[in-house]
View 1: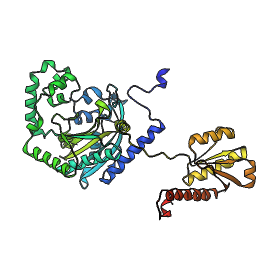
View 2: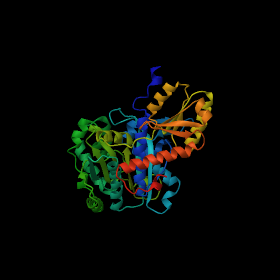
View 3: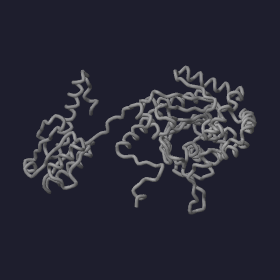
View 4: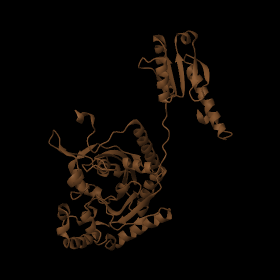
Length: 444
């Protein structure tokens, strides 16, 4: 029975307070991305397994150890998405979006799934915001995507972050780097983990991303990719650095940064915070110029990033970032008696239709219990309705902040009365803050 009342390991519930924060983060990310021209795309929660095998890479931890894969009733191998990029690339190819005017700028908010050891900042189900850009090969695009990621993070109140930057070159120059890595790791093969020994011939760069402390220590002395990239890749990377410097975006070159997915080429980057310990990477991305072609399309330069929303929430908490106050109850109607309950139900419906957050009793509470509940809701106003109020057609509206009471009609005109009261109070609040000459129409 305990299993029925406990979320699966590595997952978490979002209670109303947390959900309000998530919605604020998502809205901020989407609004900021829209300023850069990125438009939202939604893709299925699961895809054909081959999509991730071919894009993410069958030598990565994600594909080898972490994917949630199953055979459906039609005998097809299906996988819950472990990351967002592959599904977006499949989507834009399927719907012919790459044939439109370029660059194509897309963004997404998706739940992703990886079977990992749960720990602080790492879950088996997690929400991710990301952007993907298709078409431009110039370093300007790299710098724009990085600038967007930074603006989202800083807009959310997180400023103590480090941009870590590297280039892993193109497939041509990387071939020479792979030779050097194979030779280096061959001398340490007996000390590598079993997974990394299997990667040596097929993709030795994956060893650089291994989470094993022993493998990480060995990898620290490996040849650096920046010593092997070709002149074109060097020029591109210099262009990225120049654009970032010109935009006032500081960065740190990290030659060991390779990211954990096989589709990356050239620029790779991460934004890291020291506020939450080992899981401080809140955003990571880079170029994947060969991915569209690898999935059967025409060669198309592309790049993007993914940003873990749950981890970003942890960093925001550590940074004491502020969230906007969630809208509460505008008015609570407290009915006494069946006739009053009927009229309260009708008025609540009218109030909600005009945009007021209105509540009334649904539990058959006493007046004292209703007022206590209204206080718990944080109601700005309360209106008690009994037989005498119905007969007179007038009730007393109480401002819960000031305690003042105002006669109001228990009819459809309650809407305009309440609107005028709240508008007048808003103007008074603004005047008390010294905002003279405020335009009243801005509140309408």
